[in-house]
Image (cartoon, rainbow, N blue to C red; front, side):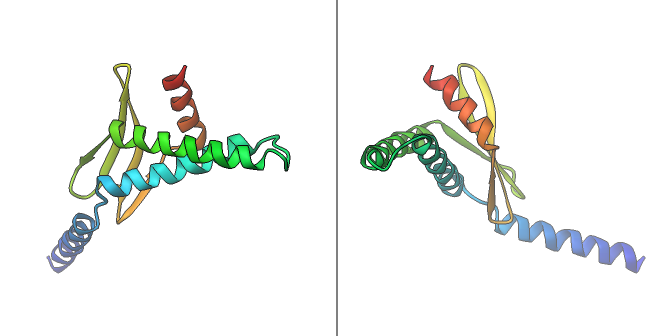
Length: 122
């Protein structure tokens, strides 16, 4: 009987910790913006010379600014008390792009984000 009570107590404590540390919309948005900044900078710097550094920097600033606005407008975060799920709906199709638990946001794979961005742009 004591083992069941201790197990129940541990589950309640872990559940309470998850509820208190569940990431909000801003945390999901920040994590996706950081991922987008990294991807845009990597894509623009591929094959760029030292002479193109200014253009790469300008393109990175412009791309991340526009990408940040798109993320802010399209991101929908559903809170399930112990975790939260970030989704983007485009063309009637919903894609999960982030999952948050214990005050950390796990984002989708780089390739999936690039594929989603290409579908939205083209």
